[in-house]
Image 1: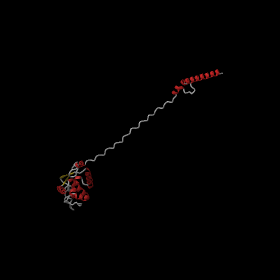
Image 2: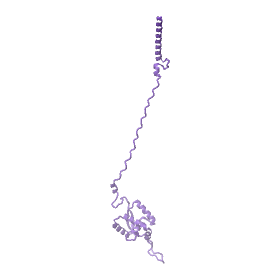
Image 3: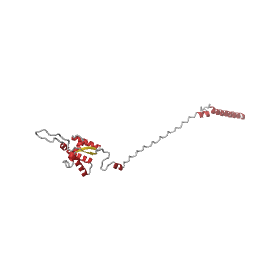
Image 4: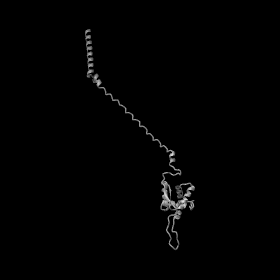
Amino acid sequence: MAKSKDNEQIVEEQGDEEQGDESLEDAFSGSGSSGGGGVFGAWGSQAPVPATTVPAPAPAAVPAPVAAAPAQPVPSYQTEQTITADGREPQRKGVGFRVSYGVARRLEKYRKDTNLTVTEVVMLMVDKSVGVLEEMVKHSVQGPKVQTSLFAPQGVAGPPKGTGPEQRQWSPRPEDLSVMKQVVEMSGLPSVSVYIAVALNYCLPEKPCKKD
């Protein structure tokens, strides 16, 4: 009886060893019941490692626009250099006009007495003339020398009073000349030169300008 128990124990141990061998073979051959493909099968069946996502580089910071430097003020000495002693810009262009001998003499006397330039005297007298424009134009007309009730006028009409052979110059700015042309158009006189002569003759001292 003892021998039979020992034989059974030996058979069981051999069976266990065979099963252990089979389980090792299954593990390496991939034929195990787990269906995992053995040790190498398990390695091969692992899920692929997801690729590491590289973060996109941050956009480079755009530099703030540089504000333009404010314009530097023009030094005052440059402005002073563009003004002459009598207050006129040196770029002004002289414009000639003709007056009678009497008007030329009165113009020169008034200029010296007031310490003004010819340009300033002309502009001052023209400014005064606008207030008496109608009277001045009527006064400037030279009609026939003799007019009677029985006979036709004797002689011919002469040039406007104040005009003549003496040439003088004034130096207006472009905007001053533009104003002068508007005044001439309003008066009906033929030109700027004639208007200046008429205005000087009527408004300079020694002749009655009613705005003096």
